[in-house]
Amino acid sequence: MIWNSIVAVSKVILFFIFLTLHVPLNAISSFLLGWIEPYPTWELIIVIIIIPVIMNAFAFWIQDNFLKKQNMVPTNQK
Image 1 (tube, rainbow, N blue to C red):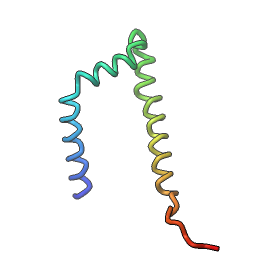
Image 2: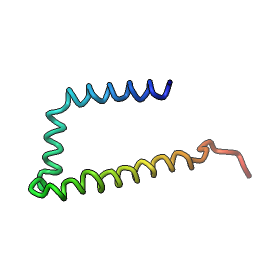
Image 3: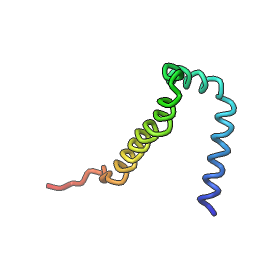
């Protein structure tokens, strides 16, 4: 219940962020992917496969670094 509530609240917040920032986000997406617009198949491959794979790898790397993080408190070992 708690996790679903957190996810629902985050989705509502993201909705309002996208609602208010749709013009700049549209301009950024046109700038980044405008060059591939004449090739819809390649656009789908990039947006549906390549970008999510890169972002998931990046998220995995960040999470792995947090999980492997050692305690940074110095010890007085001689």
